[in-house]
Image 1 (cartoon, rainbow, N blue to C red):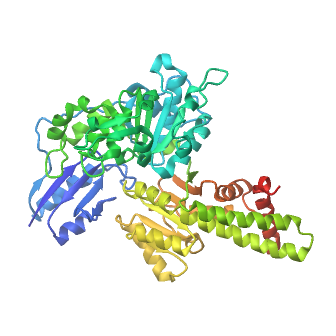
Image 2: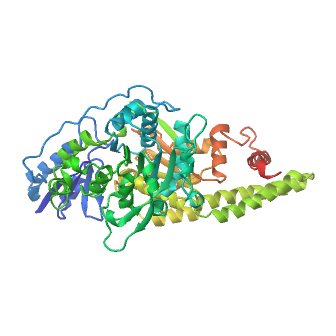
Image 3: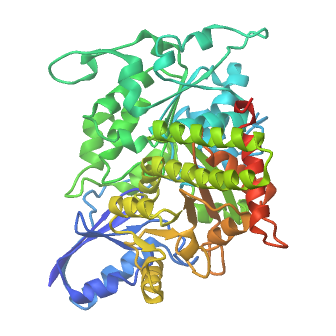
Length: 578
């Protein structure tokens, strides 16, 4: 017989037991469970769309424990209840937002409630599930505070710290939601970026109130010196310009969960004394409760939990360093944290939402060289007066457009891989569409547990991949070639669909999206299109979404399709053809 250990964290239950076929067979009956191969334990999320309305994770955990004891498959049960004095703290009700929201787009009611909470707490973790709009809520919070400083205190200027692949996306979102320009810190403005805030417009407003950087660049822009010896906050001398910020937005704050890394210490130092510190993460606890310590220190909130020693002793006890989790959950909600699950706000969401994410490509020179070729072809095409020459050039332009798409796709792999990690590490499944064989191969190399559907697979291989993705909780990623996997397949185990590459036509995009958006899907479906910054991607996406289809749907005439593509490409590069 085996010993069963049950541990709780604010987001999940962890089950550990010695090998026993009957126990394994039984635990697999729990919806949404998954096996963590690295730690050799089973994980059951507290919240999942797979639980029926009348049952929850606690129901299944109790049923499993009682069944194992009744049949004497376990010698003892350690349920992690180390303390008899654990408090049950009621969770606060989320409040509606009072007054204007100042956004260009109308936020959903639950998003306004998140903004209301953030304006009240000011230094907090926005923990909504991915896809529920934490970015919008953060932007709305700082903008409303800036518009009503007498009520909330000044929030501008704002520094956004995010993964490198998301810098351009944050810039676009500030413009989209609030109409605000922002500056991405780079080598060209390293010594002068603050001037954009110091210089004022005619109305007295700064030229720019929003500045964006990535974790790896914090030292370059904000640290003057790291003294030798033991690495502590005292060993860091910061650039005095960090004092100008009134708000810090920290995207994917779980990257700061370690108390020892330089970047987490840099973020802590930059965040000190700020009026607003907003941490955005759907997975604040990745391993155990110790992951919260540095994130709470960055917020200046650790003392609200009794300080470092008290937090460790009370909430990080036991073999899994997680204890008094219900109490901790209540403390977090009442102090500096909220989390909403998609299932609970489905009535406010559309069935399907699309967003495009601008990312920097890491092969810029290769792309720029290829772009020069297409510009020369276009110049020659525009000046050609012979139909035969035009037809030849048209074919060369089509080939080069395809080459630009391929180069951009390869340059986006790292950024897309970061996104994939953020989704699957949070316990969700993802459908990822690509086209190039080498792109699929590289993604498969980075995510070896993923399954694939490509033109090289026969029908049986495709079905095996689909079945595993649909039924195996440990299989969270499926990579598909949109020609082979864009139609006919049912992949409702996921509610997220991402495109690193995409076809020319709107109809093909919809077909691919609808692998998840079909009968049996219980969640709204989020579709993500990754566009290489300053590449042809964005223009192709614009064509797809606004013109719906560039082909001649009636005749399907190939020459007409090529002419449309070339005409649209001429329009794209018209300023560079003069």
